Length: 302
View 1 (cartoon, rainbow, N blue to C red):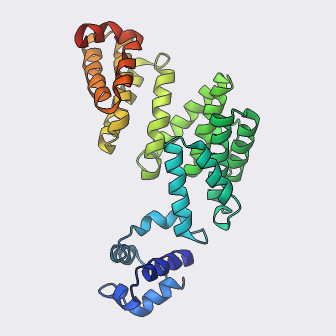
View 2 (view 1 turned 45 degrees about the vertical axis):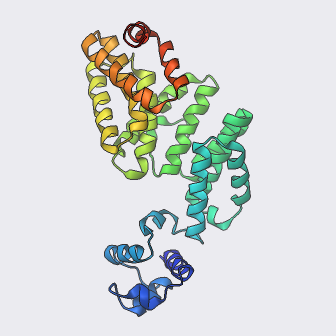
View 3 (view 1 turned 90 degrees about the vertical axis):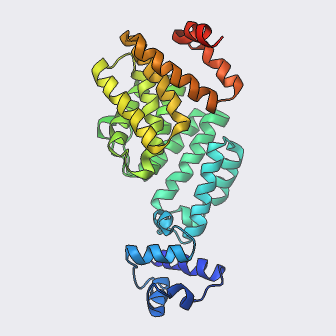
């Protein structure tokens, strides 16, 4: 926990807070000194109180304590997320290239993040599929993952899960659809087990949507209905409202296939409501292109 102590000391000094002020009503000053030197590990209660005093959630830094500078590593990873979310691939590439040799990103976990970013850039920006596969393969092997042994996939960490998810997209983009389907099914089965772990919730939702969309016409109806309704409840519980409307579309499509028009129309209504709230007007117009609900939309929302 030495690096966590270093982080606490850095934030304390940045805030011009004395050891005495930090220790007050928490523990002794000596104990704070020992924590900052990495010679004592604080209890959950003490760590929470220190974080409260520093106006910081220290638990967010626990994944980075193997880094030399957890604060720097977290800020970089957070910025990676922003660039990926906004699809700013040039900026993502530049930042990744800048930090790739930094000691904080030589640790096993975060070196995989570097390969993940380079693979994203090659897949979606340059469309260099050989380079894409090179970075995905290197990243997965660094994190003790297995390639082409989808029945033996174990998702040891979120970075490894993200690399497998990218490998699936690589297969689909290179018309290796059979491999893509095999990996998608294996990923869904494994990430479903981890769906209640906070770090995995977002990628579980992403993988599950791809899984249901790809296999909705192939699965047993009873099995699929149960899985879809459970998935809807999970998203509502997690307040993932920006993605729930996609699930309403999937449920509408499922009940269309099943021939249950009452349930189909119910989820179409919910789908349209959420679509209008979340999407732009242009995106809403694009909903009319979806085959099985085109007549329904024209009749009710023309």
